[in-house]
Image (cartoon, rainbow, N blue to C red; front, side, top):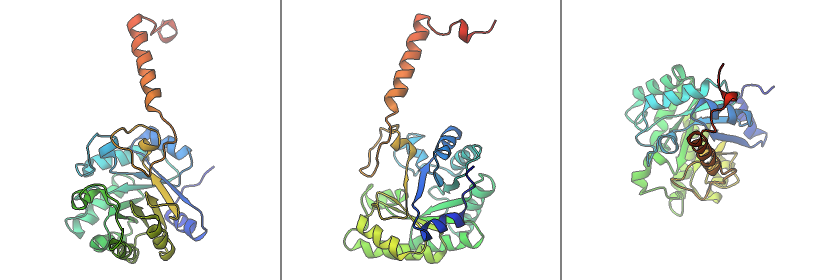
Length: 266
């Protein structure tokens, strides 16, 4: 039986050269399925705002909504480490608010770590949250909560930006992050960062040299039609299967095939 994954386990995986697997989940059934599949980390992402709630960005997601999703995931009793995204404006208004909100995610939501977007500009927050024993996964490069500053979801770290991304990586490590997500940066830069840092790097659109990889569950199952990033590999195409099942149900109800005696009580 698989044992519960912990922060020290994740750190050892980098030391041992073992790749770290991460997928998102936002509810009880998907958390069970993802955990049964053997992932090391379940990220309860604010990507729920896009793939679950239908927003165009992650910006509208609230603390209460994230707490709802984290609680649902935790009810599945996953062996994977559960990391909760801190939504936009939950950590940006000061250290006191950040510590309080991250504390809520652990105390009320049941998360075992939090993820905070931002590099050097958020290092002081990561340091404060880490100092009260709340493990922090950092997130640098293409940070979706900064979509307006970046002018869209564009690759970061090319040319003169590379030094800034490297500085961000060092800053979050020195601030106490136990791992860092590298999103939407050139593979060569991600390889350099992964070699330089002592903490694990988790890539998404950052090439094969990161210590681990993360994708959104709806993307790999073909359940999100809003966008299809280059870095996503679709492992199943469930949308037409679900649509076909619904169409069959509708047809059987309308023509009287369902329910039958088999599905009725005497």
